[in-house]
Length: 155
Image (cartoon, rainbow, N blue to C red; front, side, top):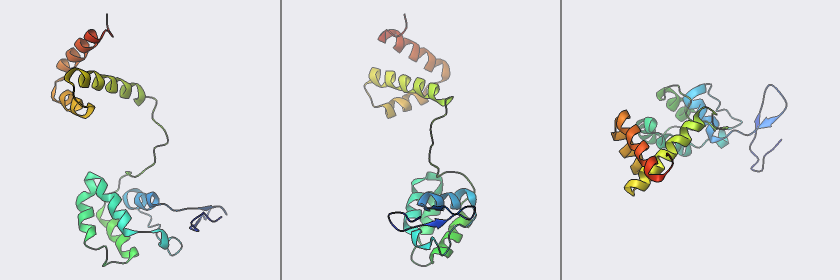
């Protein structure tokens, strides 16, 4: 099976064909470490794009700066192998397939608390989170309770 762009990767377990994406290469660099780059998918690999995605993650920024020096010097295989040797094994570039049902109530609670603080102090939610971060737990609880009382959420 050929995709619109004509790129394909043969799955050895079956006769189906799947497309290799930049995220597959990033997962290979950061987690799998199986060196999936080969002559069949070499044309899909772009060192510049890989380096750009790595630079977006704070923990890989210094690695990205170092790799940037070798963008035009190393070929794709050497670049991928060098990047793989520099990056520690972690699962960082993955597609979220849904939220955990356990985190959703906590996320909703935090969002409402940030909304309360941002309305009260007339600041953005990012700034409200900074205010929230500065407080100790008893002070946080007291502030949120008082803001809910003022708003009428608690009677």
